[in-house]
Image (cartoon, rainbow, N blue to C red; front, side):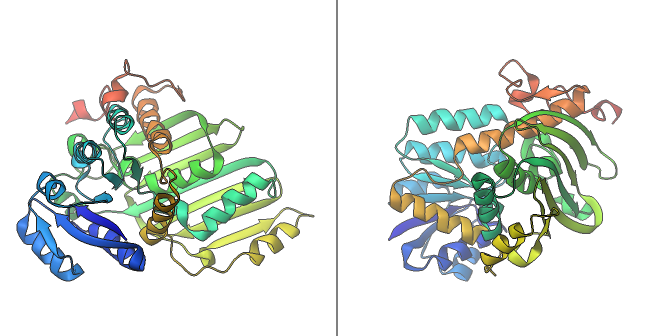
Length: 361
């Protein structure tokens, strides 16, 4: 049986604990660590975790672990992941996994020097419908990809940002582009493959924060697909939508924080009704896309000796997309894949050369 621990017992940690329980006798949650002792005690009591520690260092010294789930605020992700790697312990880190491309590269270097690995929580990749869609794309069933759209239209009021680490570049790394829409456009990227260039805008429309509260992008992919991406925290009718227009069918999903097969629809192009038949033949899952699906895939990879999904290289592609979006929005230029290197201000911080509204404060 695998031995798992959780570092950070805030709200998202409960999803990890539930996913570990759902895995049954494949894994055991043996310990948690949190600088807030009261919160750790409460979490351990609720989740039935036998041991608690005041910090990761103490927990790593006392426990023999296969994996640590890093569920702290974003600014702590990289230091904790690097410490786990140095101890030879695998890491499953919450999104956003880092605050910048430079921090991702720190983890890449630490992973190369370790026997352990880092995987990022992008759970929407692992819902049954998304797995099926990627397979049908790879098999050529849907034909060439042409057009796509990806909308994360959520609502977060002023009270949400009263938590000190929210809405700041130093603690959260960005606004809805970094912390909310990331799930949907990571799924978009996992289906469409490498992106080529991006044109974007970002604005601070209504919330008193350092970061944006809305962003929009037009993206061209390496295969020629053109896509729009919208990330908002200002939208009272909340929805998460993805649409893929292929030669032979439109495939789309609308949900909020997780989907089942029932949230997906396939509309065939004239003469290609067989695509719908193929989709429906395989449509059976009522499981909500979420941490449970990814933890299962993660354990499968560990058991088979493979690299756990989502690898740091996968993660870097998504993080580079975010950095490019901010760079395009803040400089008013088209940004191409591979353009943001160590000499770019957007490599060390998503804020880069500075948000346009920063000087107006």
